[in-house]
Length: 120
Image 1: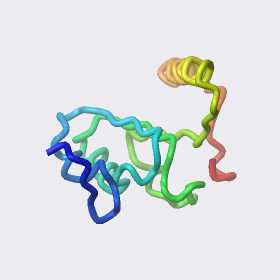
Image 2: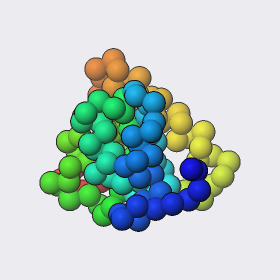
Image 3: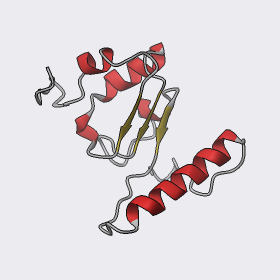
Image 4: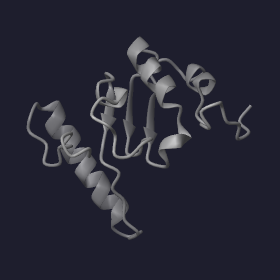
């Protein structure tokens, strides 16, 4: 059933929906933090059901230093940054994402590291 149903956390991407995803699948959330059940996401990554996830949004923001999201394996947290420019935002964001991904995979320093001491 793909109708917009929400779980007790208020999330549309529920624990049940994550469980029905193909093993090894990935999730990207750039919408709103509450869209996905964050505990279910972390559980699925920790058990290896999901192959990875990237989130640009979370609840709460900024994330506290002790948030489980910082330490979940396979979860990449980027600062919630967005802009209203429809012509440059997507290409610029993808360029930066792929630059960071390439450097990460090569073991090189990434230009836009999250400063966990500042919360973003």
